[in-house]
Image (cartoon, rainbow, N blue to C red; front, side, top):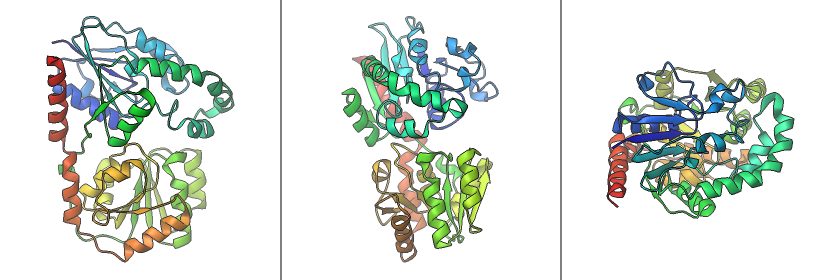
Length: 366
């Protein structure tokens, strides 16, 4: 059986790329197709056959995936996958747009329907991460997005089956694409996280410092409550500089911490904060694997990964008042780190790979 794995782009190494690594373990002879590739030094891609699109050869656009969004539909449709028996697209954007032969099985592992076309269109327009081309992007996107949505909806009919990474993503697939999907959760490396029953006196938040991740809410809340918090990000951008400048001494920032340092922070934190509206995010599960409870905004992904009052507590609104009330309530409660860690065990690599392979084998027989 000849297998192709198709990805939106391979630039950084995040959750989508972890899923890709798993697929490569399951199908070690699979070929990779992607719009652009910039992970030459990553050992998981050594000796792999990687086919990139024409975007790879366009300076500047090849490293700005949002600016290249009008080209990626053409890029993915240009790939010739006629020799493959199985195509697996790992998609949060346009990789599902590939065209396959009728006898080829195409399964899409969907991280979310394309956020900047559908669920978060207005938010993306408002924040428009286009740097010096921000004004051009804000002018152009509303003029082309209707056509792109139509194109995306049509392309969503090309996969034979959808797999969703969460119940929330499955609902979005149903709403925007009118397709059913099977939920298979991604995994975390449970053995990497250390259970610590004695916690230090600080809260923790880790992720990219971009508007919808709500670092601003956390800074405002902890400027007011005076409690200690550690903020870790890998994006030292303008927003980071603005928020760091207004942070009081109880707020500590770290840039690009090594993974072992972040794992230690998980293990020792009083609680992990989860303030954004996320369709899917494994970072809070990593906190739970460390026996650390989570204080989360009561929306979407958070609702399907918790046992309320056992592993997490919620705040109802993305406001300073609501978050600080939740923190006060949290400090009046007791949590069992062992119980919290136990809840994370359903996100194991073994379970993920077993469910995924069983699904693929079942559909191959049809």
